[in-house]
Image (cartoon, rainbow, N blue to C red; front, side, top):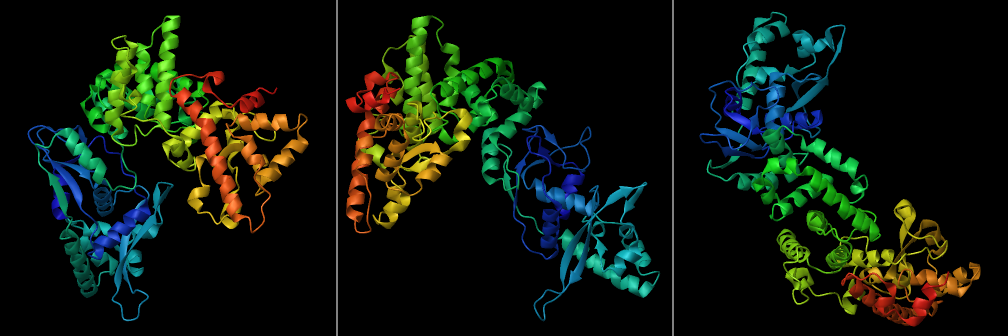
Amino acid sequence: MKDWFTSVAERRLRLPRFQRFEAWSHNEVGSLLETVLRKLPAGAVLVLKVGAEEPFASRELESAPALRPGDRVTEHLLDGQQRLTALWRAMHDNYSNRTYFVRFENDDEEGSQPAPRVLGQYRWNRGGKLYPLWCEDPIEVHRRGYIPLRLLNPLGNDQRNEWALTATDGNFQDAWQLNLRVQELATNVSQYNIPYLSLPEETPKDVALDVFIKMNTSSVRLSAFDIVVAQLEEATGSSLHELVEDLHAAVPTLQRYIDGGTLALDCAALRSDRAPNQRSYQRMNISDVAGDWDRIIAGIKWAIEMLDAERIYDAQRLPSVASLPIIAALHQYFPSSLDEAGNARRLLRAYLWRSFLTRRYDQSASTRALQDYRGLRRLLLGEESDWKTAPIFDEEVTPLPTEDDLIGAAWPRGREVLARGLLAVALREGARDIADDQTVTAGNLSKREYHHLFPDSLLLKIGKAEQQKTMRALNCALISWSTNRNISNKSPLQYLQDRVSRADMGEDAVRARFASHLIPYAELAEAGPYLESDGEKLVRDYDNFLAARARMMLPVVQSLCEGVGSQSSRGLRATEVQAARVP
């Protein structure tokens, strides 16, 4: 530790400015100090060797000496800031509201040796004095059995002898014994080993940052966005945080979907013809990002408006975020003439839904995003006419889902893209509540719940089905919490009869509500009631329902993936279309 402290004191070890400031609580500081005093390992740190020029703008550790002209920086501390800062500040006693002490106490186990315990004493200022007063009185500190941590500073402390003599009220023999204890502790601290990993000075900046992000173990982890924040401020004097605040002010609904800073950087990367990933952030011209900010805001606003138009209202109902920066970045190429705009809007609608209903971005998302961005850009600019220019439209590369895919899609509250995509399709159709007839909107989402059309408890108890089979996207509808409570675990036949008996227009009204979710009414109306012995029939009815709903949804899925929004073009069964038209 003495070597580390010497590097900090001589200004040779510094922090890249993109690192956040200290974030540890005083409990974490105390725990680290006990680890050191007990000679237990506290983990390794990561440094980057610095050559003739610093690769990153840097700063000193909190409360460490500032850089002076002529000082030679030899290392940047990439990981370990919180630990070294905590040790430095505790040993230098420069926390404004804490003073650290150590004393030895017996553990609860019989026969155990006294072990060091650290006290982080809270301090406060009153009338120009720092309380509690005993912390500044060596006699009172010693009477309580404590030794100030500052006396153990690896760089030395010339107050040790004087403190020991004062603490023992001038008793030279006691002072000698106390000073030996302090010296022993100080030696242990000075010799405490902090292992490290070192990147050579020729390491490229983007590689060093990638290693840093993957290895960073602080309690408040940094993201690629945090790093770009510091680099933008260094390059332009502009605050990216302030720019993101401007973005959220211009697009107030953005926060319902995604972090604005990350989306803006992804959009900026694509606009500079780079993949939306961390490596691109480091290779972009950061000054251009600030200069292009108004256009980035306009593109993001346009993308969010498109989500709202497609009735996708929040992050929980958003199947995939991968397409958002692509659409935002393409805004600059959107045509202004009426008919061309209509064609372009259909193209982008088709792209959006394919991103929601295929596995295009399950892997290598950033690379594939750049491929699709380039293909869509060529189509918008009229350089190509074949939609397959964007690989997402090549069904050999990116196949559309089949009926079996729809049947197998998981519960939409999870992260599976197709599962959320199928719920999004239903919401786009209008998704009126099956009891109060209210359409799902952004304003009432908080009052909506995921409902099992075939109750989970029935399938598990009577049908002996596995949980995985009950949790299917096609067994789900988003309805009001009050309707969900009213239905409870009734069989479909039972809750349909309840709805029909209460509807002024009878069965036609209820059919229309279910059709708005793309739910086949007939298959539900035949399901139940079930006795304990009806397990096989229940599972058979459930399988028939899933297959019927898949057949009903698939034409809609295919139509949306072609960018078509007209209900009449989707080939719904005549009975369902007719029911959906009931006022």
